[in-house]
Length: 408
Image (cartoon, rainbow, N blue to C red):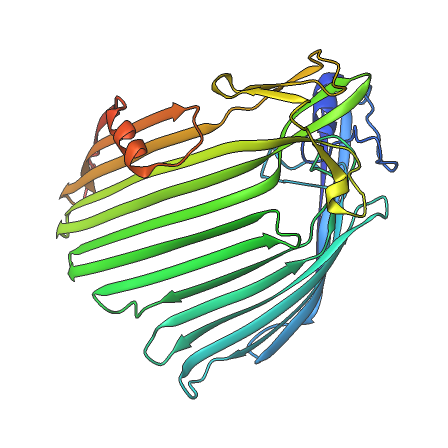
């Protein structure tokens, strides 16, 4: 099978609008080390192209595979009609899959697949490589198990410094594993977890999500889905500033925690009357530490790519959310770093009653409630945060919608 797809884009506007497009986070034309592109503040249009070429074997065979080549030129712009995160990229992918759809041993079905990729930008700079292997299976008792392992090499990121020179990001690996019980039963469970770690061990993310679905009758379904994530990142972007006519890229370590839980209830009273409820409390915290600046973004050793301010260079006023930097240690403030720890808490819910009082004619009654709170402390305390969320004044919306069908 051979498939070729391509697309083109052209945006036009004032010099100010096209300059903003060139400097957007998808392309960063202002990067000082990007020799194949450059910021032109006199431009009034931007043209680009993207696409993919795929050659491989797909269909009903057990063994499948393919070779892919995807590209997006620096000038392509699709955000008026869709969403594009990053351009100026060429990506080569090799993919293979082996699947068994007939029951054997303890399995009802089994699939194993793997992929390998390399990437470049349109200046010919090699950005990095990676690979993964994944499997999913259904057992004869209708339980499902899936898992995977992903490995990425050190990679050159042209967006990490947000308009600055390319930064060499660390290699990392991640694993994931999930299990789901028989979905035909009245009570069904699923549990999924993942872990992402950098090769040097300075950054890591762990998370899990669970789902419980209970069907006590044919007319009632209740589902509860909690999720939790804990992340420690050594390099979180904070801001840019200028010092002695040199640009400073300021980062910090950040410890984040996210907890959420969704509750859904679907009740069918009659074929013409239903009640649906959805509610979700959500908590997210982030606490900064170890403020640092980038010194050599492509140094061979990871620790040589930044300098962490020592106690003689930095004084942080945590309650105010900023730090004073004395870079040259002359007892004079050289610049300010603004960073606020955060504690965000929200609750969203919707209750919808639907009554089809005659064929094609429906009455809806809706109650929507939202609560949103914010504090500048970055630690996670579920008991305190839940009580604080309960104290937040709710925003309630009540809606009535009535439709009436004319004719037969």
